[in-house]
Length: 77
View (cartoon, rainbow, N blue to C red):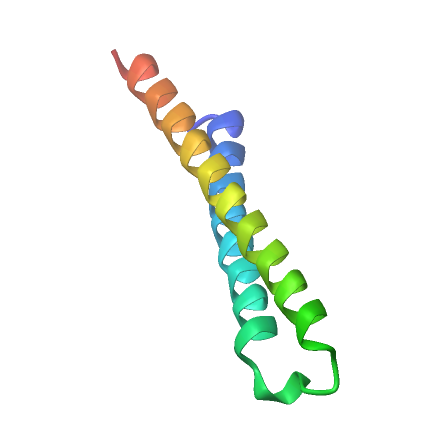
């Protein structure tokens, strides 16, 4: 396994974890009863931004998965 291949797989895993983190934080802002001291508009705005950014990151990770694994297939041929 080359170092570049290992790095690509590591970045996919890290990107997937961060995707889940951003979506989780967004859901926390929207659904948490512990944040009642923050204005509801601000909570929903921040939660929506985190969720949309998490979705964007998910698409980027999916593209990176296709890129890394298609390059693995080309190297194996």
